[in-house]
Image (cartoon, rainbow, N blue to C red; front, top):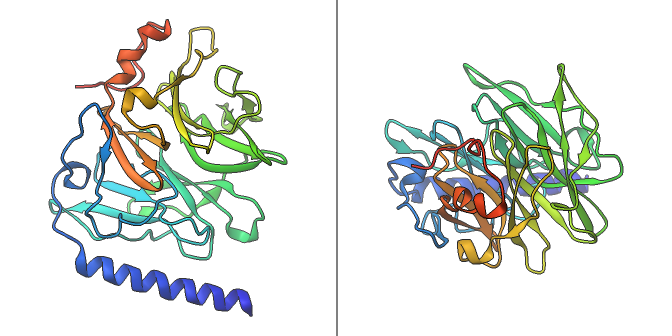
Length: 304
């Protein structure tokens, strides 16, 4: 009974918040919610937009064509995922995503590079711990969500996950106060047992989480620590190992950042600072590559 009352209250709060957002939502046109592109130092994203002034638990992610945005607001695990679409040249007011609701523990949406799949974390179905779910793009929107057969064992999958164009899934998982980044590779139609990335990425006794991997799987941007959280970058070498992760605080002009997401056009890095969205020109990704001692193919993005 108490659980039902709590769910009812959450539903009422979400509906009230949604109604306020729809009535106050400004007219936004153009790419990325019509926001002015950032420079080489991080700037607020959408700070004046109704519905984005609250803390976010995940980065805002955009589809490959730039016409859809999804995000998870608030720190309450029962808060649903929200979405906005570019329709007839104008962004719609934020609304609860059709596949989400306040009682399912949905979190951290992430598009496949081609935009044909949408992944997210969820505790739906009465699960004690979050698991990874996926939907396929269909004519009506999205197919019914299905859980991926990826088992993190006793670890708790936490915050953002990421997918490359080969459907390999990168995610952070923690046991108590230590977190590491793993990859579950997709081979011959199935997901293999998760592999922990090497010490160049996963620092001993640290909390590493919320990875973003480039479509070709050669660039990894992730969060380390929570006191404060900072973004790091690593490049995959030809032998499959990674370069020593570099702190991006000085590069992007933010020493408190987490939950990275690089737009499909490779132009911008979005992340959160204290739950608020920031963004910055992503040209540094290629600028830092030779300094990391790595050459070769681009990171799956073209920076123009």
